[in-house]
Length: 179
Ligand code: PRP
Image (cartoon, rainbow, N blue to C red; front, side, top):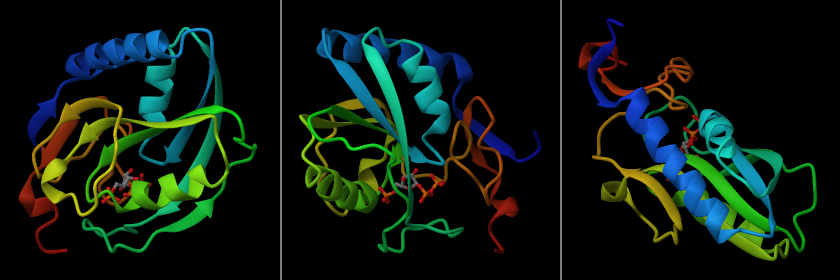
């Protein structure tokens, strides 16, 4: 695709790492069932691929949290635009995210979900971008540490597009510089 400047993580790298994460999580939750909470929209591809590798029983629920709108930097404002459908009280909850950047979204979500009394609450993120962190987040499962670059693909969008691309890339600057 013309927009691609550089592929940061190939489809093979992503899938291989997801398989390993799935094995780690399956081992840690052996004998329990897991409620996977996908944070829309970016976490969707990861949720689907990760959950194929989980051997415990799995339940899905979805939340939508708006922090960025169409901008490329966090506004720091977090708003729930779609809440869970089920109670998580007494359940083993694993939040599935595509990326942690400033940490503001998860900082808010952790507080919010803890108050609903789950049996346990952990985070699994495909990508971790520690350079931009504004608040410390306890992350149990991380796919890859990534540099502080504008990343697109595999759930991550550029103006709501390219989430379906199976690899992660940096776009050419001319595509977004004059926005
Ligand atoms: C992205 C990502 C995380 C959040 C991380 O979502 O999926 O939810 O930003 O950023 P933070 O650590 O700085 O809070 P976004 O708001 O872009 O929505 P999307 O998943 O629908 O693209």
